[in-house]
Length: 219
Image 1 (cartoon, rainbow, N blue to C red):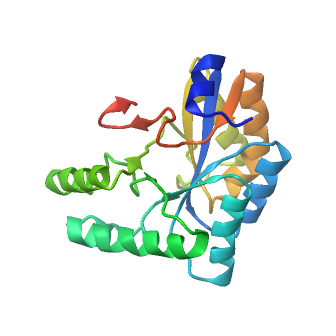
Image 2: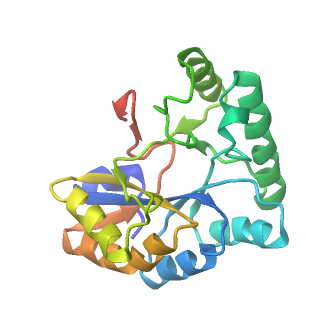
């Protein structure tokens, strides 16, 4: 079940947010099938994919009731984190692509590497955050890293054990997965069932939902 913020707090239940970075990829369709099977909505922080498959995945994500977020067009740290101008050029390129593809601009953003990455000079990150606020965007980090991008790659059982161990004792979890990661895609059903066994419902990120930002903490 997907809940908006008013419902979240009235239910006073544990909530998990499944978020997927860096797609669309070859796994996107499979992830969407899994989420549909369990009647769950997810939040997808996407990159720029101008192929027919990529464009169709943007539309399918929206059509099935999930949420799209901007993750920059290129995910190229040298390009997006050298200065604010370089960041905005890349950010705007994806924004325009999504407007053309799905008919609107998303209002959520996730920094490649997270908002606390040491690759971003302090002056640059401050100016980018100020620009995002002026455009009424909300940036979203995570509270649980599935570790599905770690090298050497973890097995699906290691991924699921990591997520389910980290979620214990928490009432709100924003879980980071990577769309391209075969290991977390394979682990996703086990994770969903495990979170439900822990008492979690599932939500999507929005301008009103629970959020977590590394520098600022809970929002």
